[in-house]
Amino acid sequence: MIVRDFNDIIKNDPDRVVSDAQWSSVRMLLAQDGMGFSFHITFLEEGSEHTFEYKNHFESVYCMQGSGSITDIATGETHHIRPGVMYALDKHDRHILRAEEELVMACVFNPPVTGNEVHLEDGSYALETT
Image 1: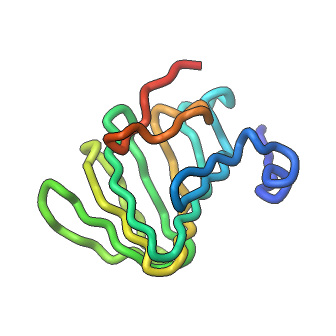
Image 2: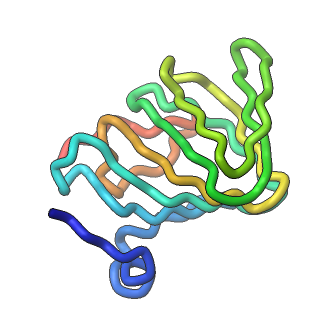
Image 3: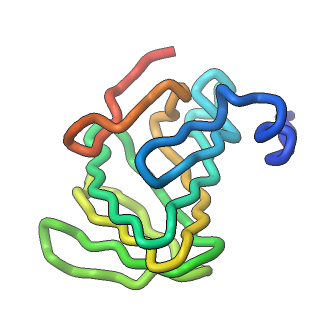
């Protein structure tokens, strides 16, 4: 059984806290945990806009706090993001995520990330092995 406290990670395990331009992510589960997925709590700054395309990963996201939108670049379709809304990038969808208010999101990645990833220029993560 794996039990982790978000606040303990913030205080005592800085390697599990990853930040980039206008977002930060607390990596609660990583590839090394052997679960077959990774689990993160991600914060997107109010007013920020991010273009992502996870070519090597599937991602599912659940909004816990805040307000924003996600636009599927292929279709132009935009969906409102608010607490209780989940989206899944089942086709490695290139998308634009906008935070009207700070967004707090629970995210699951498959395959799991290792914790060392940073977004590449195209908005994806490279596929890393543990």
